[in-house]
Image (cartoon, rainbow, N blue to C red):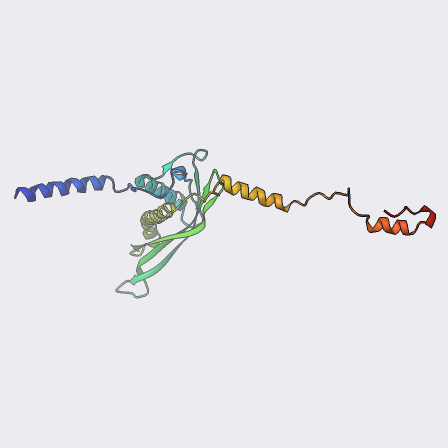
Length: 225
């Protein structure tokens, strides 16, 4: 009995620790140099106001909860985010029992194009990739109200998917430095391609000189060597 009581207490303690660290990513592959990020409000191209600000806020909340990246100002951030909320779509999944022509449940989908740039290198890590997330909503005859209620949940799911993409970022590979032996080999190759200077001393007469001498009168020709 004492053993089982000890085990139950230990499990409860572990559960409490894990709950407190739910958002922490242990051993993230993202280099330390890429862990500062700036997230402005997303550009909103949907018909629903404040979707861009809402999606950006959910994204920042997910970043803070995750703990891998640090939100900072535009000037200090290594990663700079730009995003566009491109559209909200809906599809009916269930209809009213009394009227099959009136949907009462929809699937709401939000799409966002994401761009992530490197302030230092100019590298584009994510170039307009489209992320989407969906959730169901009961409209009960109030479609606009139902969509408005569903958007925070959809934005939260979308933020998690974009955050997962951030965890795949890595620095571009750098060109390896040459060793002394490799540098010497390169220099030898370059010197071998340089043509040797032509010396005109101690060489036989050229064809032009022979032709010019042939055109001279016999008394002006040079004696043979």
